[in-house]
Length: 284
Image (cartoon, rainbow, N blue to C red; front, top):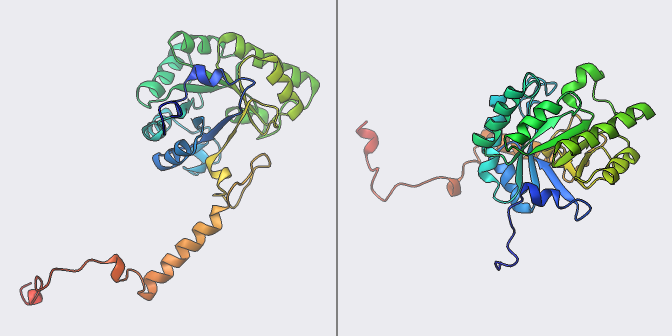
């Protein structure tokens, strides 16, 4: 590949400049091998989402994700990402207790995790914290609509913005995030018509998940994209592969091969040099 065509690392300004241009493609990843696959395939940005608390750690919600957990996973992803922009997801309460806590926690994603930006759920009520993070030199992506960290208040993972007043509030919140200086906004589980209106009204990229095709880009969860979860499939997610039955089949084949003695075979074993082990059994 020539220097002219060599892929350049994605930066926050380059990400923002894609508004109304080529669609941005974002994917979650939580470890080194997943991030390496995503990065080498050409993903624009990798979101180390607090969804890791559910899809990797097996918890029922994102609410018990911790900063230590998020930084650890972000660090693993950053080691693999040569080109994609790595975005760390601020977990529950990490940005809401005080502006100082918000800056300190966001800073951990940058300093310890190697991320290039952070994502914060909600705009209303977090104006001061977002401003403080931006003032500290930390790029911030917003996240509105369905915000999983608010499910105790919302009542579950429900589509937001279906009523007119609620839709107007979401539009206002998007504009507020733009005015504060966020470089992008995730729009989750809102009507596609509302997402299209927001995308037209703001000058920063909108990244949809369950928000229709009118956004400037899309994000999917790694496990949803690859069909790794056979028990639950969100309506807004598409399986671009169905790996769960393939993985199940491979493990069952492994079990069978070990029990039958077929594995390991000569091809997977090592032989001693000629004469090296002659009569050694008599010596031990």
